[in-house]
Every structure is written in structure tokens, then in C-alpha cells.
Length: 83
Image (tube, rainbow, N blue to C red; front, side):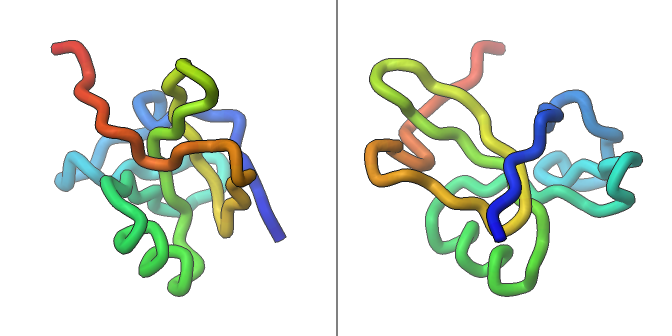
């Protein structure tokens, strides 16, 4: 079952690992994935993930458990956050 979380990764509680945040609503860790291999591994372990997607020319961040990505979405496009 696909689930897209309405929350954003940066709004979750920080942990010691910058790529892991804790969701106080679900009481689960959320893992920010940089590539498809990492997403697949987390997905097999039924862990919540966050990752960047590109829809048309817009880059957005998706977060959820056992996510479904339509064919027209470029998951994990090369993206550098503004610092």
C-alpha cells in the first residue's frame, strides 16, 4: 500500500544522523535516501523514506512508507539544496 506523508523531512525531529529524522506523529524514523538502491533497501525493511522527485521542471521532496512513484516522475534527480 502506498502512503505519501503530508509532512516535510526538515520539519521532523532531528537525530544524531543528519539523514535520519524522527516523526513524532507516527513514532518512526524517516530515512532520507540519495539513490534508488538506498530507497529499495529501506522499502524492503518497511521503513519510511524521504527523497527528491522531479515532476516536469519542479523538484519536490516526497516522504512516506512503501511509496508509489508514477512513471512520469524522475525520482532522486541530481539536486543540491541552497545553503
